[in-house]
Image 1 (cartoon, helix red, strand yellow):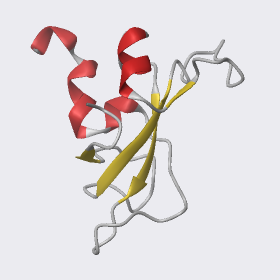
Image 2: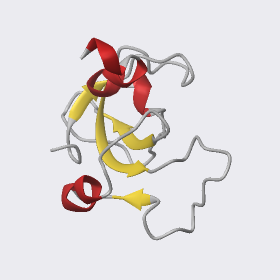
Image 3: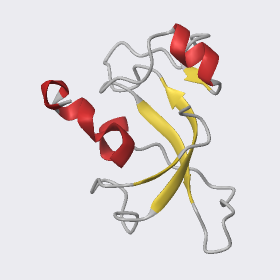
Length: 98
């Protein structure tokens, strides 16, 4: 399961978020590619079944996520870190290290 997973943000691109827990809401497939098409039907994937059918998360994806607040809820505002900047996908930086 990917959607709904809680993980830690390890990157530096989102000020103040490093080391914080975030919750995954969707995968923005191929969003780091120069030819990414945000209007494509398979760009914003918010269910695990579809994500698995499309091959899962890659290093070229960003993640729709939100910080987890102290009461366990998430705010309305979401962020879109690179998948590789989340602890649960850090292995995508060096796939041979799996």
